[in-house]
Image 1: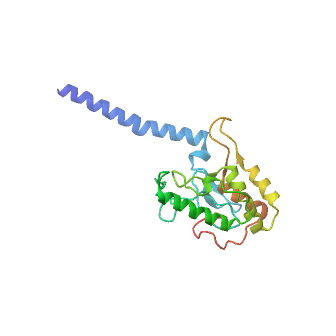
Image 2: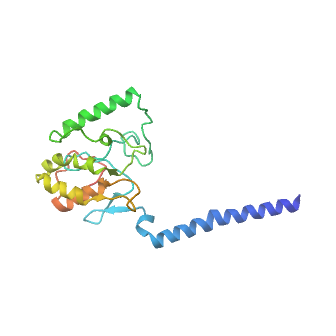
Image 3: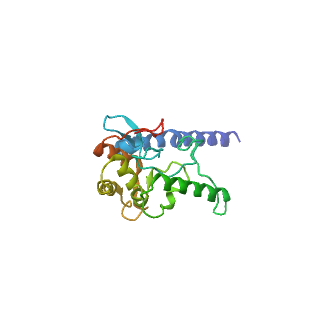
Length: 205
């Protein structure tokens, strides 16, 4: 019994060292060496070099001169990275229908020049509440509002959106998408920063 106990303790200690120390250190070191940007959190900086967010975590934008992301149910006011979650409401939920209808009315009020109904992603939150992407259609639908707020032509804004479209990974994985933070930073680089009235006080740009 004593011999078996000693063997078990040795195996346990070796396993803890290999899986709890060696493996994490090796994988972290390789990630830092091979993919330093991704391993470091995919942080994004503005034209002044200030870190304004991560490509991997969405944030809220409310000013008319910026593209708006999907609604968020993460945290009390949305976009809380410490409270990532969806609404957990099913398709038969009256609360979901009501919130979607309210979001649709708000979108139409904020985007009076937009053509047609908005893509469904603009009135429903993602499962994480922190989705950093929109579909190209979700971004292009907002072009009239953004162009008007920035006093530039819709065609110039549309061209910028198209330049920011990320294609499927390896041509087959996922769907085409637009990173909202990167798109809004590109807007500022090309057209300058608009009046920030109406932006979330804790969000950048």
